Length: 117
Length: 506
Image (cartoon, rainbow over all chains, first blue to last red; front, side, top):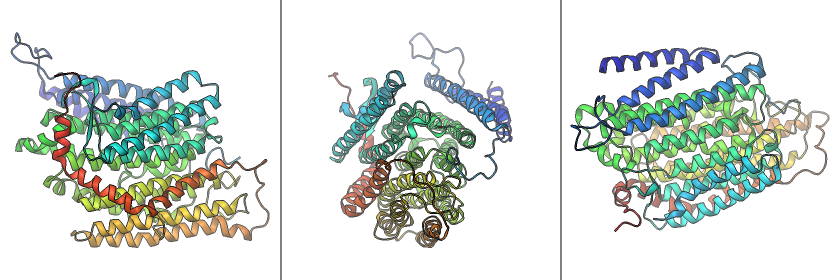
């Protein structure tokens, strides 16, 4: 199981970093999403991989699994979901306003928008 | 337990939705709420500074859970100082924005309050994961503020800003994960005790986590090689937002100081953080000042000046001695105030030169050139570090604070050499914008009606604050010496946090 989790985190991170380095916003957004999947799996595993154990200390069970990473992962998932929504909307808006979806800034434009008129 | 400690987070958190829900169509009402809340915040911050300067770190247990099981807020001298600085800058920026910037897009005031909430939270929290959460709060508000007013170029810059920071947040989570996996805690005071007990086989993971944290805070603090996002973002952000962002780089610097004095402090820090932080900071300083020299627009120039100031600040921080940290904190206060003022001045210049904006081109005379030139002159003197303003004292304190360290020659050389570059850059910009304009025929039309006083007053107020910390440098640096002493007395911090008893329990 360790190998499966570790390699999936590694592969998702590698794919995420590759996509993040692309020049257009759509692959970059996908790359960020992949990276956040990888990190969520990673965070989940940081409390050690334990199966068939309750997340509470109980006299009946022989041990317990660390509940804190699960709570942290939940927070991280909510935040990364929200952030993905934000970046999608901003990338769309940038595409609609400028007519292209390059990540680069507009040429060498030096004046501030709204002040050129 | 002092319940006032949570108010700097709670109040903006309540005012922001209140503005969004009740005052979304009434800009006057939104302004009243927003300014009122920020004035209260300033009063609160000053009161908390009074509380903190008594000496002991004040601990607030959220939900009455004892540390390290619950999240704690900790108010010490450093957090109180940062809260006050945020409130001062926030109030000035807000007063500038209500002159018209806040009407150029929806929800400026709600986002502004959420931003203040995130910044205050980051300064108060005593929990590493909670720090991540407050980073996200302040970032998500800053994404909204960054693209306030719209425009293709600004939204493109906004997308870049969001991408860089999302990557930073991802790295933050990796770092938190690594540190948790070997220590089993995320409470900073508890971590400070546990890192010493980590098994030698796990030291590699712990150090990787610590250096990743340094990288993440370096992204926030625009440390080379992670400085590339800053000029585009700051130069294209709306002026008041860029001025407010002057505190955002300091959130990164604050986090470096906090984490690497408390958690990875003591002997370890010299081996862990200094070898990376010090060279990076010196390169940041040189690169920033070269950028000042090469900038083609005033907004860009000030952005690079911010990068250079972060370099100066972090070079002093990197030594992690009480004297150097105290000097760095003085420079932090100074550079926040002055950078805020300069971004407002950039806007004053830009909006009066239609067609030219803030680019460093020779253009005809524009309205109120004299007043703006005077403000720019003061700001440039302070930023370049010329006497008599606070930049000079800040650099002097840093030069004095690093004396005796093995790398002192490098730091002295870099700071003194780049000061000259900065002076040249600012002098060139000022003479192009204000003096050479006389040689061009014609003049830009003055804005109709009487000129609003508020923008000049607020930019002036920030510069006046710089003058104030120059006059009262002795008082401030006395407070900062105590702050640095408190930072390095980690055992008292740990005892205060872990010894805090629950309320209402015998």
